[in-house]
Image (tube, rainbow, N blue to C red; front, side):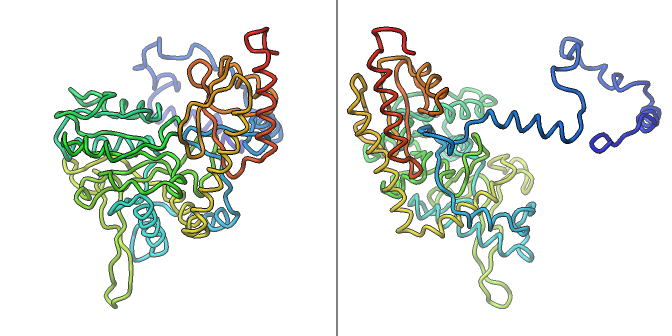
Length: 434
């Protein structure tokens, strides 16, 4: 009865009060084809000990990043998180807060949000940043819709290798809009925006000057997407952009088997009132003391629906706090050192893999992620390496494999991957790889 508190009598009394004989009568409007003919294949109720054992067995099937060589990136990266971060965000003032924006009681939370905004604005070179988004993919989709509102144009143009999941989210967002196309081409007179990811999905940093000129000439907004925010520790801020958005998971936020993560969003001052989400501003109270208040909230819950710029209903407040704490611990010098360390690890990985016969490395430049071309199918290779406790990366088409390195990647990890691939490449095309 611990998890099923209703007794048979309780159910009988509730059905009688509702005027029906069984729960099934509540679902008479549901088509028969949409109903399950029988219970799904799950165990029925068990005791707490049995449930714990069953869930523990299931969890043991997972392969956490720290349990062996790990080279998977593609927008979700294995970084070290100082113990201080978790310790602070689990304080009850932060962990249990819901809609913590009332200025008279939440100055600590509002201060943290303001600091987060300041950090993002400084990193991206933009005038203003909001109080965070769900993740990089939805932030990018919101940026595209924002560009359509600003320009009054319909189409969304994409340059080069945008993360495929980001594109899928954009296409999902625009399904309710008529006459909107997503194109892989330079912007034209009907382009609302030109979306560029840097480093791109294959790890290549992009030169932005020429892309900026294309947008200036066509009247489209330039949206820069960054799904590895740590790259801004080495690469210059994308000041050429009108909007900069992306994923900030690398700082303070665990991979969590794919989410939830932390989106960020920044733009030029001119576009402030079209920005989605929330914005915390600095002011003074009646005694002249520095204080903070929620300044802008452009969703339909707060303002008239027709004036809303977005229906995003919240921000990743706790993760934005985690980011802010981690960045505060690093400082500007520490952030740059961490970025350089990641690049050095990736260079060491690339140098070692380049020595493996039959492997090619097509990237001209990269930050901490690059493509490896194998003489065998990448998906099958990843599957075989996973069975050996090695997460080799993200398989792309054919023999292409996307690999990443971070400060968590050891020399031993690199050698292990290289040695296994050497053995596999040696027999590739000669006989079935064992």
